[in-house]
Length: 291
Image (cartoon, rainbow, N blue to C red; front, side, top):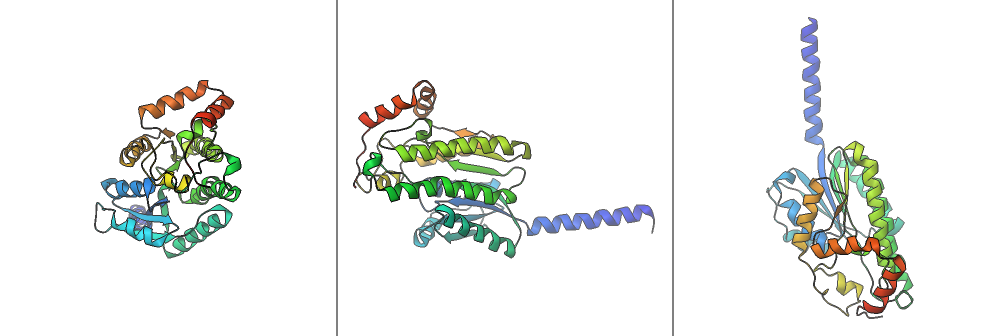
């Protein structure tokens, strides 16, 4: 066999291996807190996108019935698109361990890479710190910070060039807030961590975006107020918030803030002392809540 024929044969084998690898390799989009609010809206818009037609969706939340209901509200761009529902509590170190087990089991089934990770799961509490249940505040830290950090760390080996991470932070991240002390602190962590992670991963072609919305029409207020406020005041449309975020993500931006009012608030926060911001919101930004 001539050297030319040997080279052609080796090239053909490499090509076959490459094609087999891409056939086996699944592209996955993971969304936590996917049964409602922004998480469900991300699922809807990404599932309807032709650019994500070859992706498998993993929707994660605690309640399987609500996940199933959410699935029925999602329209896919292709009928072949696969969606998996995982009912699990990802809160804290135990939740991160469960997520790790999920990744290991799925890897045993077939190799996959993560096209997009959306850390949306989280909650807040209204009211002065001394009047809110301490256990609830600690659980908030576990979910908003520990879980998000752990999931990012576990997903890193499965990311590749072009992969995206969206961490849902908040407009509350830009200043300490009275009557919202722990929540604002957790979201400040998410924002800081996301920007640092974006800087570290940029050279690998992996992009990280912190979504920082203000009031959005979701179930957030009902949970944060313990039922005292069913809907948030002046809430924005989650469809517009998510659509804007995905545009920013496609451009590799590190933050996504949609409404002009939100952008102005984030900008002005640079010139307000942290104590002044916390004191003002404590005195004048009272939110209804049940103890």
